[in-house]
Length: 352
Image (cartoon, rainbow, N blue to C red; front, side, top):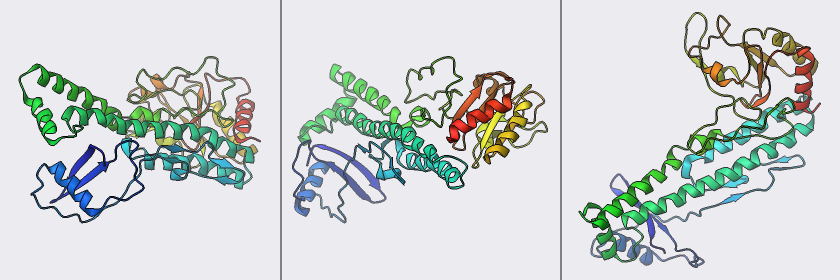
Protein backbone atom coordinates (compact mmCIF):
# COMPACT_ATOMS: atom_id res chain seq x y z
CA UNK A 1 0.00 0.00 0.00
CA UNK A 2 1.19 3.48 -0.86
CA UNK A 3 2.21 6.40 1.27
CA UNK A 4 -0.85 8.57 0.68
CA UNK A 5 -3.75 8.37 3.11
CA UNK A 6 -6.67 10.22 4.60
CA UNK A 7 -7.67 9.88 8.25
CA UNK A 8 -11.06 10.87 9.60
CA UNK A 9 -12.62 10.50 13.04
CA UNK A 10 -16.05 8.99 13.55
CA UNK A 11 -17.18 9.12 17.21
CA UNK A 12 -14.55 7.08 19.09
CA UNK A 13 -13.38 5.20 16.02
CA UNK A 14 -10.96 5.99 13.23
CA UNK A 15 -11.39 5.38 9.55
CA UNK A 16 -8.24 5.02 7.47
CA UNK A 17 -8.30 5.36 3.70
CA UNK A 18 -5.22 3.72 2.25
CA UNK A 19 -4.26 4.42 -1.35
CA UNK A 20 -1.88 2.11 -3.21
CA UNK A 21 1.18 3.40 -4.99
CA UNK A 22 0.55 3.95 -8.73
CA UNK A 23 1.27 0.73 -10.60
CA UNK A 24 1.22 -1.45 -7.48
CA UNK A 25 -0.11 -5.00 -7.96
CA UNK A 26 -3.41 -5.20 -6.07
CA UNK A 27 -4.43 -8.62 -7.37
CA UNK A 28 -3.68 -10.07 -3.92
CA UNK A 29 -5.75 -8.79 -1.01
CA UNK A 30 -3.51 -7.56 1.87
CA UNK A 31 -3.83 -9.62 5.03
CA UNK A 32 -5.30 -8.37 8.30
CA UNK A 33 -1.78 -8.29 9.72
CA UNK A 34 -0.54 -6.10 6.85
CA UNK A 35 -3.44 -3.68 7.30
CA UNK A 36 -2.83 -3.52 11.04
CA UNK A 37 0.90 -2.92 10.56
CA UNK A 38 0.13 -0.07 8.17
CA UNK A 39 -2.31 1.49 10.64
CA UNK A 40 0.20 1.33 13.48
CA UNK A 41 2.81 2.86 11.16
CA UNK A 42 0.44 5.75 10.49
CA UNK A 43 -0.19 6.18 14.21
CA UNK A 44 3.56 6.25 14.70
CA UNK A 45 3.68 3.79 17.58
CA UNK A 46 3.50 0.03 17.02
CA UNK A 47 2.81 -0.56 20.70
CA UNK A 48 -0.58 1.15 20.65
CA UNK A 49 -3.26 -1.55 20.43
CA UNK A 50 -5.62 -1.35 17.48
CA UNK A 51 -8.47 -3.54 16.31
CA UNK A 52 -9.79 -3.64 12.75
CA UNK A 53 -13.60 -3.88 12.72
CA UNK A 54 -14.17 -3.79 8.97
CA UNK A 55 -12.28 -3.62 5.67
CA UNK A 56 -13.78 -2.66 2.33
CA UNK A 57 -12.24 -1.92 -1.05
CA UNK A 58 -13.20 1.07 -3.14
CA UNK A 59 -12.03 1.72 -6.68
CA UNK A 60 -11.60 5.23 -8.06
CA UNK A 61 -13.32 5.35 -11.44
CA UNK A 62 -12.75 7.76 -14.31
CA UNK A 63 -15.15 6.37 -16.88
CA UNK A 64 -17.74 7.88 -19.20
CA UNK A 65 -19.66 6.21 -22.01
CA UNK A 66 -19.14 7.47 -25.55
CA UNK A 67 -22.88 7.29 -26.20
CA UNK A 68 -25.77 7.34 -23.73
CA UNK A 69 -28.34 5.76 -26.02
CA UNK A 70 -28.69 3.32 -28.88
CA UNK A 71 -31.98 2.49 -30.53
CA UNK A 72 -34.66 2.47 -27.87
CA UNK A 73 -32.20 1.88 -25.02
CA UNK A 74 -31.30 4.91 -22.90
CA UNK A 75 -28.78 4.79 -20.06
CA UNK A 76 -28.14 7.34 -17.34
CA UNK A 77 -26.47 7.82 -13.99
CA UNK A 78 -23.63 5.56 -12.91
CA UNK A 79 -24.29 3.33 -15.91
CA UNK A 80 -22.65 5.95 -18.13
CA UNK A 81 -20.42 8.05 -15.86
CA UNK A 82 -18.42 6.79 -12.90
CA UNK A 83 -16.18 8.93 -10.74
CA UNK A 84 -15.23 9.50 -7.09
CA UNK A 85 -17.49 11.62 -4.87
CA UNK A 86 -15.19 14.65 -4.97
CA UNK A 87 -17.09 17.87 -5.86
CA UNK A 88 -20.33 16.12 -4.86
CA UNK A 89 -21.42 15.86 -8.50
CA UNK A 90 -22.65 12.26 -8.55
CA UNK A 91 -26.31 12.37 -7.54
CA UNK A 92 -26.82 15.79 -9.14
CA UNK A 93 -25.58 14.52 -12.48
CA UNK A 94 -27.73 11.37 -12.31
CA UNK A 95 -30.84 13.42 -11.57
CA UNK A 96 -30.04 15.88 -14.37
CA UNK A 97 -29.70 12.97 -16.80
CA UNK A 98 -33.17 11.76 -15.84
CA UNK A 99 -34.64 15.27 -15.96
CA UNK A 100 -33.24 15.81 -19.46
CA UNK A 101 -34.66 12.52 -20.72
CA UNK A 102 -38.03 12.37 -18.94
CA UNK A 103 -39.85 15.23 -20.67
CA UNK A 104 -38.64 14.05 -24.07
CA UNK A 105 -39.85 10.50 -23.48
CA UNK A 106 -43.17 11.88 -22.24
CA UNK A 107 -43.75 13.93 -25.39
CA UNK A 108 -42.75 11.09 -27.71
CA UNK A 109 -44.94 8.50 -25.94
CA UNK A 110 -47.90 10.88 -26.19
CA UNK A 111 -47.21 11.44 -29.90
CA UNK A 112 -46.53 15.11 -29.25
CA UNK A 113 -42.95 14.91 -30.56
CA UNK A 114 -40.97 12.88 -33.04
CA UNK A 115 -38.74 10.03 -31.79
CA UNK A 116 -35.89 12.12 -33.24
CA UNK A 117 -36.22 14.32 -30.13
CA UNK A 118 -34.75 11.45 -28.10
CA UNK A 119 -31.53 11.65 -30.11
CA UNK A 120 -30.82 14.96 -28.37
CA UNK A 121 -30.45 13.20 -25.01
CA UNK A 122 -26.98 11.74 -25.62
CA UNK A 123 -25.84 14.80 -27.57
CA UNK A 124 -26.66 17.06 -24.62
CA UNK A 125 -25.74 14.92 -21.64
CA UNK A 126 -22.64 12.98 -22.76
CA UNK A 127 -20.40 16.09 -22.85
CA UNK A 128 -21.65 16.90 -19.34
CA UNK A 129 -20.63 13.44 -18.19
CA UNK A 130 -17.13 13.93 -19.60
CA UNK A 131 -16.77 17.25 -17.78
CA UNK A 132 -18.08 15.92 -14.47
CA UNK A 133 -15.84 12.84 -14.47
CA UNK A 134 -12.84 15.01 -15.31
CA UNK A 135 -13.65 17.57 -12.63
CA UNK A 136 -14.33 14.98 -9.91
CA UNK A 137 -10.98 13.28 -10.41
CA UNK A 138 -9.16 16.61 -10.60
CA UNK A 139 -10.79 17.46 -7.27
CA UNK A 140 -9.20 14.31 -5.89
CA UNK A 141 -5.80 15.19 -7.37
CA UNK A 142 -5.99 18.69 -5.91
CA UNK A 143 -5.71 17.16 -2.44
CA UNK A 144 -2.27 15.77 -3.18
CA UNK A 145 -0.77 19.24 -2.75
CA UNK A 146 -2.36 19.46 0.72
CA UNK A 147 -0.91 16.12 1.75
CA UNK A 148 2.47 17.17 0.38
CA UNK A 149 2.44 20.44 2.32
CA UNK A 150 1.53 18.59 5.54
CA UNK A 151 4.36 16.12 5.01
CA UNK A 152 1.98 13.18 4.69
CA UNK A 153 3.69 11.90 1.56
CA UNK A 154 6.99 11.23 3.31
CA UNK A 155 7.67 7.52 3.55
CA UNK A 156 9.37 7.62 6.95
CA UNK A 157 7.57 8.51 10.18
CA UNK A 158 10.46 10.69 11.31
CA UNK A 159 10.37 12.63 8.05
CA UNK A 160 6.61 13.19 8.38
CA UNK A 161 7.05 14.49 11.92
CA UNK A 162 9.84 16.81 10.83
CA UNK A 163 7.88 18.12 7.85
CA UNK A 164 4.81 18.79 9.99
CA UNK A 165 6.94 20.55 12.61
CA UNK A 166 8.21 22.94 9.93
CA UNK A 167 4.74 24.49 9.76
CA UNK A 168 5.35 26.23 13.09
CA UNK A 169 9.04 26.92 12.54
CA UNK A 170 10.39 30.49 12.30
CA UNK A 171 12.57 29.66 9.33
CA UNK A 172 12.73 29.96 5.55
CA UNK A 173 11.64 26.32 5.25
CA UNK A 174 8.71 26.96 7.61
CA UNK A 175 7.63 30.01 5.62
CA UNK A 176 7.83 28.06 2.39
CA UNK A 177 5.81 25.13 3.78
CA UNK A 178 3.10 27.41 5.21
CA UNK A 179 2.79 29.18 1.87
CA UNK A 180 2.58 25.82 0.11
CA UNK A 181 -0.22 24.79 2.48
CA UNK A 182 -2.17 28.03 1.92
CA UNK A 183 -1.86 27.61 -1.85
CA UNK A 184 -2.90 23.97 -1.65
CA UNK A 185 -5.95 24.74 0.51
CA UNK A 186 -7.02 27.47 -1.88
CA UNK A 187 -6.77 24.97 -4.72
CA UNK A 188 -9.42 22.79 -3.07
CA UNK A 189 -12.04 25.56 -3.42
CA UNK A 190 -12.71 24.18 -6.89
CA UNK A 191 -14.06 21.11 -5.16
CA UNK A 192 -16.13 22.85 -2.50
CA UNK A 193 -17.36 25.90 -4.46
CA UNK A 194 -17.67 24.55 -8.01
CA UNK A 195 -21.02 26.20 -8.76
CA UNK A 196 -19.85 27.12 -12.26
CA UNK A 197 -19.05 23.53 -13.12
CA UNK A 198 -22.50 22.44 -12.01
CA UNK A 199 -24.41 25.22 -13.75
CA UNK A 200 -22.42 26.13 -16.88
CA UNK A 201 -23.77 23.28 -18.97
CA UNK A 202 -24.23 24.14 -22.62
CA UNK A 203 -26.55 22.01 -24.72
CA UNK A 204 -26.13 21.82 -28.48
CA UNK A 205 -28.70 19.67 -30.30
CA UNK A 206 -31.82 19.81 -32.45
CA UNK A 207 -33.78 20.53 -29.25
CA UNK A 208 -32.05 23.94 -29.05
CA UNK A 209 -32.98 26.50 -31.72
CA UNK A 210 -30.03 28.68 -32.72
CA UNK A 211 -31.06 29.92 -36.17
CA UNK A 212 -32.06 33.38 -34.87
CA UNK A 213 -28.82 34.04 -33.00
CA UNK A 214 -26.77 36.76 -34.69
CA UNK A 215 -23.63 36.35 -32.60
CA UNK A 216 -21.61 33.36 -31.36
CA UNK A 217 -22.14 32.06 -27.87
CA UNK A 218 -20.31 34.30 -25.35
CA UNK A 219 -17.20 32.89 -23.69
CA UNK A 220 -17.40 31.25 -20.30
CA UNK A 221 -16.22 33.16 -17.21
CA UNK A 222 -12.48 33.34 -16.72
CA UNK A 223 -12.77 30.66 -14.05
CA UNK A 224 -15.69 28.48 -15.26
CA UNK A 225 -15.31 26.10 -12.30
CA UNK A 226 -16.04 28.70 -9.62
CA UNK A 227 -18.26 31.19 -11.46
CA UNK A 228 -21.54 30.74 -13.21
CA UNK A 229 -22.29 32.01 -16.70
CA UNK A 230 -25.53 34.01 -16.57
CA UNK A 231 -27.09 34.15 -20.02
CA UNK A 232 -30.29 33.33 -21.91
CA UNK A 233 -28.32 32.12 -24.93
CA UNK A 234 -30.17 29.01 -26.19
CA UNK A 235 -28.79 25.83 -24.68
CA UNK A 236 -28.01 27.50 -21.35
CA UNK A 237 -29.84 27.11 -18.04
CA UNK A 238 -32.42 29.88 -17.57
CA UNK A 239 -31.01 32.54 -15.19
CA UNK A 240 -32.41 32.94 -11.71
CA UNK A 241 -33.93 36.31 -10.76
CA UNK A 242 -36.03 37.16 -7.72
CA UNK A 243 -39.65 38.08 -8.52
CA UNK A 244 -42.82 38.97 -6.67
CA UNK A 245 -46.46 39.73 -7.42
CA UNK A 246 -47.86 43.26 -7.67
CA UNK A 247 -49.41 42.74 -4.25
CA UNK A 248 -46.27 41.59 -2.45
CA UNK A 249 -46.30 38.03 -1.22
CA UNK A 250 -43.73 35.31 -0.86
CA UNK A 251 -40.61 35.92 -2.95
CA UNK A 252 -39.95 33.42 -5.76
CA UNK A 253 -37.64 32.92 -8.72
CA UNK A 254 -37.89 32.91 -12.49
CA UNK A 255 -36.88 29.25 -12.13
CA UNK A 256 -40.11 28.64 -10.18
CA UNK A 257 -42.13 29.75 -13.21
CA UNK A 258 -40.44 27.23 -15.50
CA UNK A 259 -40.55 23.44 -15.50
CA UNK A 260 -43.57 21.45 -14.25
CA UNK A 261 -43.57 19.38 -17.43
CA UNK A 262 -44.28 22.24 -19.81
CA UNK A 263 -42.55 24.85 -21.94
CA UNK A 264 -42.85 28.45 -20.85
CA UNK A 265 -42.28 31.89 -22.33
CA UNK A 266 -40.86 34.74 -20.26
CA UNK A 267 -41.70 38.14 -21.75
CA UNK A 268 -42.48 41.69 -20.61
CA UNK A 269 -44.13 44.98 -21.58
CA UNK A 270 -45.06 44.86 -25.27
CA UNK A 271 -44.97 41.07 -25.37
CA UNK A 272 -48.71 40.50 -25.06
CA UNK A 273 -48.93 38.81 -28.46
CA UNK A 274 -46.71 35.97 -27.26
CA UNK A 275 -49.75 34.77 -25.29
CA UNK A 276 -51.73 34.32 -28.48
CA UNK A 277 -48.75 32.64 -30.08
CA UNK A 278 -48.42 30.25 -27.15
CA UNK A 279 -52.10 29.32 -27.26
CA UNK A 280 -51.86 28.68 -31.00
CA UNK A 281 -48.78 26.48 -30.59
CA UNK A 282 -50.39 24.56 -27.74
CA UNK A 283 -53.50 23.89 -29.80
CA UNK A 284 -51.56 22.93 -32.92
CA UNK A 285 -49.02 20.61 -31.27
CA UNK A 286 -50.69 19.53 -28.05
CA UNK A 287 -47.58 20.69 -26.18
CA UNK A 288 -48.36 23.13 -23.37
CA UNK A 289 -46.63 26.50 -23.55
CA UNK A 290 -47.26 28.88 -20.64
CA UNK A 291 -46.53 32.63 -20.75
CA UNK A 292 -45.42 34.89 -17.91
CA UNK A 293 -44.97 38.65 -18.21
CA UNK A 294 -42.25 40.14 -16.01
CA UNK A 295 -41.69 43.85 -15.45
CA UNK A 296 -43.14 47.14 -14.28
CA UNK A 297 -46.86 46.70 -13.51
CA UNK A 298 -46.86 43.25 -15.11
CA UNK A 299 -48.23 40.10 -13.48
CA UNK A 300 -44.78 39.49 -12.00
CA UNK A 301 -42.63 42.32 -10.70
CA UNK A 302 -38.89 42.34 -11.36
CA UNK A 303 -38.24 43.37 -7.74
CA UNK A 304 -34.51 44.04 -7.99
CA UNK A 305 -34.37 44.46 -11.79
CA UNK A 306 -32.37 41.23 -11.85
CA UNK A 307 -34.32 39.85 -14.80
CA UNK A 308 -33.90 43.07 -16.78
CA UNK A 309 -30.12 42.73 -16.37
CA UNK A 310 -29.99 39.04 -17.17
CA UNK A 311 -32.62 38.37 -19.84
CA UNK A 312 -30.56 39.82 -22.77
CA UNK A 313 -33.76 40.50 -24.74
CA UNK A 314 -35.99 43.57 -25.02
CA UNK A 315 -39.17 44.00 -22.95
CA UNK A 316 -41.22 42.81 -25.91
CA UNK A 317 -38.93 39.90 -26.67
CA UNK A 318 -39.26 36.43 -25.22
CA UNK A 319 -37.25 33.58 -23.77
CA UNK A 320 -38.62 30.10 -24.47
CA UNK A 321 -37.68 27.70 -21.66
CA UNK A 322 -37.86 23.92 -21.98
CA UNK A 323 -39.42 21.72 -19.26
CA UNK A 324 -35.91 21.02 -17.90
CA UNK A 325 -35.18 24.75 -17.31
CA UNK A 326 -32.88 25.13 -20.33
CA UNK A 327 -33.45 27.88 -22.87
CA UNK A 328 -34.73 26.45 -26.16
CA UNK A 329 -34.94 29.73 -28.11
CA UNK A 330 -35.23 33.46 -27.66
CA UNK A 331 -36.51 36.38 -29.68
CA UNK A 332 -34.76 39.68 -29.06
CA UNK A 333 -38.01 41.62 -29.56
CA UNK A 334 -41.56 41.20 -30.77
CA UNK A 335 -41.68 40.01 -34.39
CA UNK A 336 -44.29 40.10 -37.13
CA UNK A 337 -46.35 36.89 -37.25
CA UNK A 338 -45.10 35.82 -33.84
CA UNK A 339 -47.62 32.96 -33.92
CA UNK A 340 -46.05 31.48 -37.02
CA UNK A 341 -42.54 32.03 -35.69
CA UNK A 342 -43.17 30.33 -32.36
CA UNK A 343 -44.92 27.42 -34.08
CA UNK A 344 -41.93 26.99 -36.39
CA UNK A 345 -39.53 26.95 -33.44
CA UNK A 346 -41.63 24.51 -31.42
CA UNK A 347 -41.88 22.15 -34.39
CA UNK A 348 -38.12 22.26 -34.81
CA UNK A 349 -37.47 21.57 -31.14
CA UNK A 350 -39.99 18.72 -31.01
CA UNK A 351 -38.86 17.34 -34.38
CA UNK A 352 -42.29 17.45 -36.03
